[in-house]
Amino acid sequence: MAAVHTQRAQIELFRAVKPDRAVDAVVEQIVDLIQAGRLRDQEVLPGERRLATAMGVSRHTIREAIETLQDAGVLAVEAGGSGGTRVASIWMPESLVGDHEPPDAEKVFEALEARRVVEPRVAQLAALRGTTQDFDAIRETIGLQRANQSNWWQITQGNVLFHRLLWRAARNPELESSMRSIYRSLSGPLYAVLSHDEDSAATEESIQLHEETLEAVMRGDPDVVEEVMDRHLRYLEQRCESMYGRARIRGVPKFLIGG
Image (tube, rainbow, N blue to C red; front, side, top):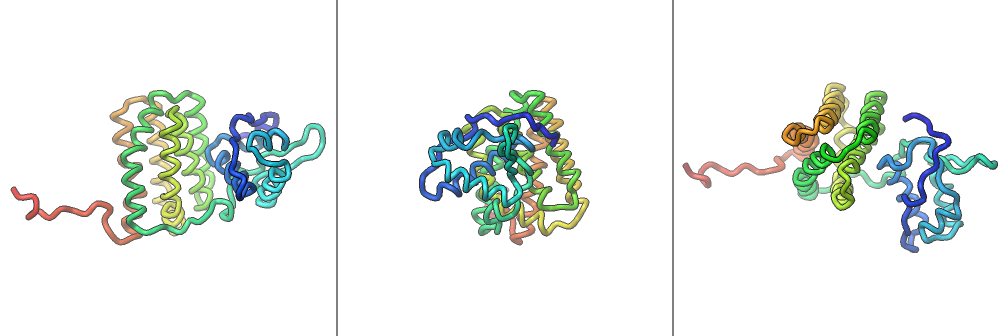
């Protein structure tokens, strides 16, 4: 993404955290804001005092969290009057993203079912409410995926960023929160599928699905969005079925149906 050295993040992005494991909570919140595209590459964070007030923690806690993210290469701290803490990289090291071991099949298939119910509707709302700025930001994530096709870890993060920006374009915080919860359950399978998928054709298919999804959303036709999202969701569903060696939805024998 293009550097925006003079842009400073709005303090309203940051929210209070619970006092237990406060440092981890601050780190997780900043990571989440970057993964959601709300903190962009090279953007400058508010000062320690303002962050501490917004998050309801001490400046020492903020400093520890910043040091953790600095050590991970995500943030950079620059001294001087024009310095500050800026986003040094949008790429999260594996240590900051949490456990990405796939859970048991039932939980994954439940999450995939929930995704089928919710995300196509979110995409249709994005088609209704999205702005040119939203679509430009989503297009940037596709460029990131194309530029990093040989790196499954960055492809995965670009994939997640695409969806986070799509949800935000729907302008419904409740639905956005629901999709975040669903994707937390799907992060393990997503990482597992892409880390073992060395087929360049499969990677190209994934990127093309993102391009087609954005094109459909920009056209604003809900029926077209529905059709494209069906194919988009099927991409991960089919790979999860292959990974677990079973069907997501079990077929009903004909003798039970009759006719």
